[in-house]
Every structure is written in structure tokens, then in C-alpha cells.
Amino acid sequence: MPDDGPSGDSARFGKALELVQGRTNRPLFEMWFQGLSLVGRDEKSLIIGTPNRFICRWLEEADPKSLLKACIQQAFGEDLPFTLKALPRKNATTTSATETAVSQASGAEPGASESAPPKAPDPKPDAVIRSSSRQAAKVSRSLNEPVAAQGLDPDSSVQLNPSYHFKNFIIGTCNQIAHAAGQAISQSPGKAYNPLFVHGGVGLGKTHLLQAICSELLKRPGSARILYLSCEDFVNQFIEAVEQRKLDSFRYCYRHLDVLVIDDIHFLADKERTQEEFFHTFNTLYNSQKQIVLSADSPPHEIPTLEDRLMSRFKWGLVCRLDPPEYETRVAILRAKARSRGCELPDDVTDYIATNVRSNVREIEGALTRLLVMADYSNKKELDLPFTEAALADSIQGSQRPVDFNDIIQVVCEEFQVRQSDLQSRKRTQAISRPRQLCIFLARRLTGLTLEEIGGHLGGRDHSTVLYSFEKIDRETHRKEDTRRLIDELTERVQKRKTVE
Ligand code: ADP
Ligand code: MG
Image 1 (cartoon, helix red, strand yellow):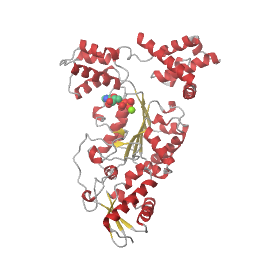
Image 2 (cartoon, rainbow, N blue to C red):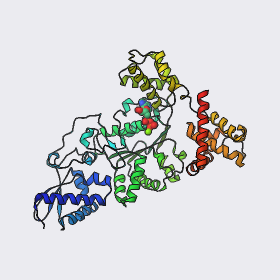
Image 3 (cartoon, helix red, strand yellow):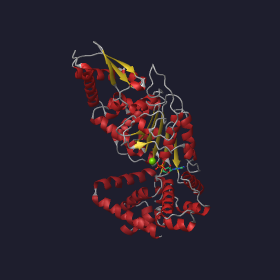
Image 4 (spheres, rainbow, N blue to C red):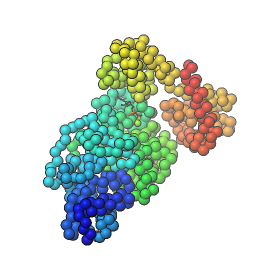
């Protein structure tokens, strides 16, 4: 047995971890292996410290154990047995990103061990937890740890926003069902509605609601493993796992969760292999009564190229829509957002914004921010209506009336010299069907209308016909420069019509 002192062993152990890193994917490595340290060695074996019992238990399983064993053998030049020992925090030599995340996922507090019973940290609800493509299952259990202490990757692409709680979510008729369903799930995950599928246009609160569910779940005692991530991250991780031939680890991460929350699931459109993978993840979790929560920009049947079997599964639980907020909700949102920034808006100012900024909550927030920045900049202490009108003039003019289907019809009819009644007729000649398909594509892109509503405007066509047309043009825009240019030009004309009126 080579024996060049403890530092040599440490270096060899470091080498062993590097070998593990080369044979696993990054998220898996960060989650399970990165926090290991060599804490002792006798003649016959190594003692390896793990940040907590959960990791210790996992490493005792056959696959991870044999991987670690093989890498140790290679690095130390001999087949050394080892024992794993969960360390109290002060002894752990490495603080890994997963120490907090996974230990809390297991219900144990960070640094928990047999010898040091966990002590609950003070709640710090402002803390942020994250998940990103490079940190696959950043399975997080608690908001109790400040970000820095979690040592998470600073370039994570998704994080739980500390203000996305239920208490900050204003309820109106536009969102009350989704809100109630979200609350029910956060009280009894896996039992209330499964899956919960929330859909709606941009800026209507999907991400806020999904994260509120996670934050609420994290407050519960127990040991639920919760993962929140964007669908884009899911897709990227899957691609990475395929490229690196690490599908087993990928599957392990995703199929051993209690709650899986994926934002913007429409990102699965056109990604056949990821859809297939997600289908199996979904089945495994669903069959074990684990909670799944999804959001998308449209209902399941309107997500282009979504496999039927996934579409039908998405409808198994509760599908609910977030609508643009109605006037009263816009007022309530404005008041709440202003108050959270330490200001009270006069009623006529609130009314002005709520009347003119209608499309979504993000725009309402944007208008408020603009107003407050301008007031600050102009040293204006008391906000009033004339100042508000002037401050928001540019943004409100023209931008607030959403594109109307008629704008599109007019532009397309003008371009192709056809009549509106032709587009609404049953005629299928190329001269008519082409402009009709373009109308459909533009309507999907520029209005908040559903496929059914678009079909309704076009002589009562059913949603699958509308979807077919949309997908046809959508494919073309990816392949043909001409089509792309035509779409850009028509879009510009539609937008112009909207602003001049
Ligand atoms: P989406 O994911 O649907 O595009 P977000 O969840 O990102 O929308 O919401 C956009 C912004 O609007 C966020 O700042 C969010 O907090 C806010 N918001 C949306 N809905 C509400 C609501 N009902 N109450 C309070 N804020 C809301
Ligand atoms: Mg969102």
C-alpha cells in the first residue's frame, strides 16, 4: 500500500473524486460526490466523510458505491475498502452546493449526523433557492439557508423569487381557481390535484404561482423532495445526460422526487426524445402518487407537436387558466405593488394605470416602476394624475390595445388581395388557404386568442385545423427565409395599425 503521508492520501482522494466527476454528469457529481472528504485511513481501509446521512445512505447503494470504489482503486493504485461516515458540519472539509439542498431534501438539517443532532436554523424567508441546468436535481427542502451558505452556482438560471409567495399573489376572478388549486396542493401534495396544469399568456402569474407552491411546501415539516425548474433546464439536462451517456443518473434524480414542478412545459414542443423521457418520468412519479405541477402558455391540446399520450396525461388532474386581470384586480395589484415599494398611489392615478394597462401583470408592474423612477428622477414627492399621464405617455400610447384579430385580417387581405369572407369560407384553393394560414399564424403569435377562438373568427374551423395551419407556417418560418421575412413584414404592419388607431 503506498504510504506517503496524509497529504498524499488527500491528493489521491482528490484524484479519485476527479475520476468520479469524469464518469458522472455535473449535477449528479455536485449533488452526491462533491462534498466527500477523506477523514482517515488505517492499514486496510479509508474512512470517507459525507456531509450528511442522506448522502451516506445513497452512496451505500450498489451503483454509486461501485463507481466510487473503482475510482478509489484507480487513484490509490489498489483495491481499498472504505467506510462512509456522516460528519457533523464542523468536520466536513468541503461545503458543497448539495450539502444543504440534499440534506434538507432528506429531512435532515445541514450537517446533521448521528453524533450531532440537527438544530433547526432560524427561518429566513427572504432566502433564495435555485435550480439550474447545470445543477440537475437541486432538490431543495428549505428556504432557511441564506444563498451564500448554500454555495450555489452563481450562474444558475432559475431561482425561487423571494417575493413569489401566496401572500403576495392578488386573487381575482382571473386566477382564483388556479390560486385555490395551488394552495390545495401545497397543503396535500399528491392528493389534491395531480397533475396541476396552469396555463395562460405571458406575465399573468404562472411562475409566481408555481414558486408560491414550492415556497409553501418548503415550510412544511417532513422530508419531501421538491424540485422546481424550467422546462428548458429539463431539456438541457436531458441532452447533457444523453451526450454523456448518463441517463441512469438523470432518471434517478428525476424519479426519486416527491414534488416535481416544471415551468413553461410548452418548451417540450418539437422535442420528441425529451417528451418521451418526460413521459416516463411523469408515469413513475404519478404512479407513486408524487405531485406534478406544470405551467404552459397554452392548454395541453394547443401545445404544438405535443404527443397525444402526454397531452392526455396533462389533463388527468386539473387544468386551469390564468386570464388577464380584470379592472378590480388590476387596481388591487397596483395598490399592493405600490405599497410594497413604500408608496400609496392616489385613486385617480391608480385608476388611470388600471384603465390603460390591461394586458398582463408584468406590464402593470412595468408601468408602476416607470412612474416611480420618473418621480424619483424629477424629485416629485406627491404623485398626481398629470405627472402620471406624462410619465407613462410613451408606454401607454399604442402599446396597450392588444392586437385585434381584425387588424390581422385587414393586413392579410390587403397583402393578398382577398376578401375577409373568402378567408372565412370553405374554399381551399392555394390563393385562399395560404393567406388563411398566415392569419392563423399571426393570430397565435400576436393575440391572446385560443385556437378555438381563432377558428371561430375564420368561419368556425375546429381547433385541430387551426393548429395544423399554425404548425405548417411555424415550420416554414424555420426553414424558409422568404416566409420569415413575410411574417416580419406583416407583423410590423399589424403593429402599426394598432398604434395609429
Ligand atoms: P408568467 O410566468 O405567467 O409569465 P410571472 O409569474 O412571471 O408571469 O408574473 C409576472 C409578474 O407579475 C411577476 O412579478 C409576478 O409577481 C406578478 N404577478 C402576476 N400575477 C400576480 C398576482 N395575481 N398578484 C401579484 N403579482 C402578480
Ligand atoms: Mg413564467
